[in-house]
Image (cartoon, rainbow, N blue to C red):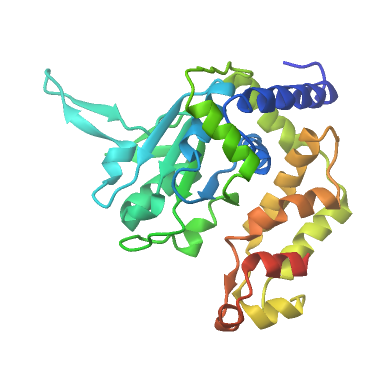
Length: 319
């Protein structure tokens, strides 16, 4: 597609700027959320987005899908949702033959809305598809479309009747992003744009083939040994009562991050460096992606909860 990796890296920076320009026609502000969501697509990761209702989570994902030229499906998770409602099911057709009808998971981008509203069996069905990139129905395996990206949302309020994701399943998500309220000025702009007759449309900046190329390009980015050592050292400092544990980990954490966090720190740093126009990541790139990668992988103990010490404070202190 491009004659060299350097040429491809330069093209990615241009494409990224075009993506941000198109997305900003619809989405006001939220620059960090947009950056990390696009970054996770190029890193072949998935995102867990936590935010109160009405912050345009669905609009954000569908807009990114349009600009990337990818198909998009939204799945509203409810207590009565079954795995077959997501993956698909076999039906008996007119010729008395079983035929597989694909579920909404067969799309490039999936918005799993309020994933904690559905029972663990259904959550596990989606998370297995995320991990394996295929689904198995009645002994037959069906490959999912590539690229494949899941953005799951959780509502931080109204926790009655929810099924929180266990830590082992949270670990499948590359990033845990917190979507906050817009600023006063941004909210005025949002209200102006959404209450007028103005109809804005965005155009596709990339194709699926280009995204797959850039995903492979991210993997080929060289990394210096000191960056590997920093990333693994950072994760090891989050593990309480181990040789390299940070004093705050021993005091405030009951569980630290696993090796998948180290892998995501490196792949995230590679992608972050490319989007900033660099050909190799440095320690600052690891630090920039550390909080959303570690946020959902650390478990606070009772001391931290009693003293009101947040995960964000713990991660920033360890950094």
